[in-house]
Amino acid sequence: MAAEGDRFDYWVGSEEYECGLEVSGTMMVNADDIEARHRSKVRQLLDNPYSVGGYVIVVSFATRQAIFSYHEFAEAQV
Amino acid sequence: MNSHIPNGISRQGLDASFAAEETRKSNLLLQATLLREQGREEAVTRFAEAAEIEEQLSRACLERGLKEKFLVHRFSAASCWAQAGNFYQAITICEQLLAETDLTERLRHRVSSYVNTLRARRNQWFAEAVAAQNAAEV
Image (cartoon, rainbow over all chains, first blue to last red):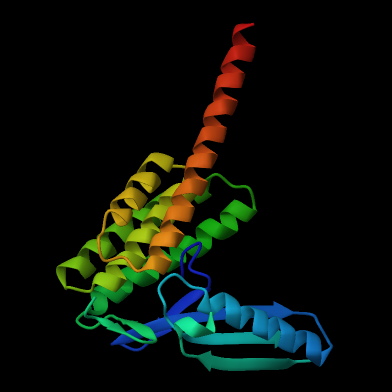
């Protein structure tokens, strides 16, 4: 589990390296709204203080859809 | 920071016992967060136990030369102490982190911002304590 202020929820990875994982659930039904939530969560994860990349998953419980993606950290992205 | 790769931090050389302690700490944090949301005082104990584990994990990382992971656990220890209500320990750890010469600017900014928030919370607590004392003496 990540700490307060890490900007994502969990540290995940292999035995050698670890990166971030941000998880978000919503009751939104509109696809544009869900994608906007996903973009917002990607920005949040990449704003972490450790300059690590990671995974973002946004789940719509209402539509039973999920967006799952991986993002490499790059200073210029943030 | 020779352990840095662009998109992750190294945990090379850490064994199963280290991972077990990380799991124990995560479980404590999850329990503490849930207990806090329920307004239960046991949350404080869980945060303090998690803070002590984070301090042990940070020392283990430093001994293995994993500087970035050391910083992650050290900063997390400060966060856990703060959530346990121990502002003194949390601020002390943050000040020690800020004294590190090889902090990235991003992390330095984050730690600096966090320690300012902690000082503000502590000062607010002081002010409320003084006001309560004064009210009791009137």
